[in-house]
Length: 172
Image (cartoon, rainbow, N blue to C red; front, side, top):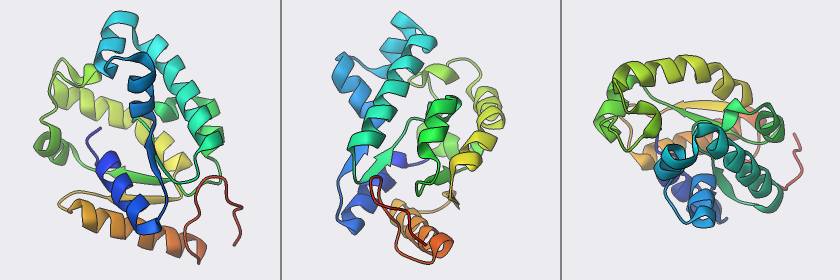
């Protein structure tokens, strides 16, 4: 949440000359309502079902940079789909999160005591993010351009070659 997935993802897509896609945006477009409304009206389990399907479809169809919602990795099937792909985990600390998004009520999982809830979410998810990530890039104090460059550099170093996009063969 607030790590810069959308902004950095767009920059990465531009630099790589590939399309950009965001599964949260896919869900909003398909449902005709905001994610926070889906959480409130239908509950988190329903949203997670929508998210699983959006990720499955995007990984199967999309051949560019793909941004996933922060909770997508909670699903074992999603983690399996991401296996072997050039996944970058954009990490940040709680102070950076406060600075960027204010941890306000627009984030349905952070509506009450947002700092504590953010920490708890990260403690519960961090190991899942690192499980699926080929690289981890710290975003604290960096501009989106600096983060995009760090992602490209880290992915290239991790494989010894240019990063691939979903749908391409994963060669050394």
